[in-house]
Length: 262
Ligand code: T5A
Image 1 (cartoon, rainbow, N blue to C red):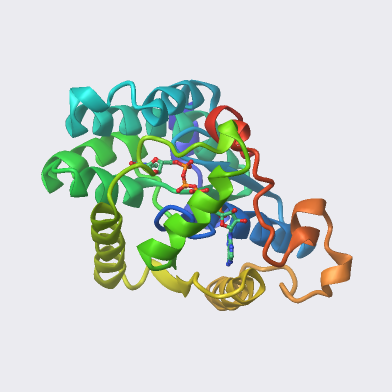
Image 2 (spheres, protein in one colour):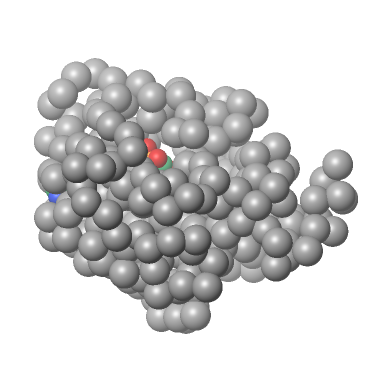
């Protein structure tokens, strides 16, 4: 099955767009808004996430975000992120792309480069794991939603007051300095891969962030989009997109930990 998908004509496949950034940058908020726009433009589109996105990978997500493997060190965490990614790609991402469906993914391999890289896993080990995990599936566009670490954490901390399901996970509990280093690493990777990345200012109002993303996606995929990504907000096709404004995520942390964003 997998071999069949690999032989698909790349020109006929759907586009693969990844969202990256630090904690509380607004990725989950914006991914839903973009999906609504793409669907309104007439595209088949799914929204997924990492770690997770497939039944097997969601099990690994639970283990990773609970902190259960933290004590085994960053190399072991890196291996588990890669294992989750391999399952996600084989069972969800590759088949969708092969069917012409656009895939929007909340975090992907760059998160491993940043988080596990910052934690001390050497670059070559990370790239070796990624090569095995992604097996040729690379994003067509990566949107780096950039916010100062202080702002992202402020948003996450505010959300954590909504209840126990929103308690900070293993990575959110790291120090401010760690989050700041991660931000710089994301920006460095973006500078080194300018043809794939677009850096979005995530510190602005969610509507303005959405506008920036719409412009980038419209320009990047001008030839592939069946119609414009412009539409009246009132005509948005689903509730997630209607929300807009500053109240993005449905604040269901249980879903974040255990459920699927698809
Ligand atoms: N990880 C992941 C690795 O270490 N290696 C890997 O390879 C991978 C794939 C995943 C963790 O795993 C690590 C990284 C992560 O620490 P997660 O739960 O998926 O954990 O964490 P995040 O992806 O960071 O999810 P967050 O919810 O924390 O961040 P988002 O999705 O960027 O932010 P969002 O949209 O949920 O918004 C957060 C809050 O801010 C508000 C929202 O309403 C929400 O309350 N908000 C805004 N407020 C004001 N203005 C705006 N523009 C706003 N946008 C959103």
